[in-house]
Length: 124
Image (tube, rainbow, N blue to C red; front, side):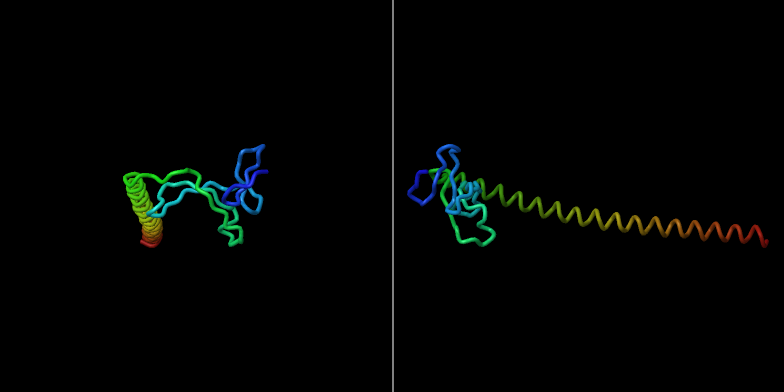
């Protein structure tokens, strides 16, 4: 195995980087303002709070300013659309619930009308 400048190792047989834990490093995409869209290697157990903290850029150079701005704008649009979709889902759910209640009331009213009609036929 070869040790790199960032203490990363690369398994010569697989060509994949490994973190300090010895696990295959996960490739993740950054969405920060400064590095939006840049990919990096990281320990797959990072979110679990492990102490490895392995990090290395996947791409060698930063994107240009217009690329970063375009990615941030696209990310913001996606976030806004996802919020609209969630609100629409809630609205649809509420409308379905209201429709079911309305249908139950209609069925109850029809049953009451039928009961009154039968009563009238029998006693009138």
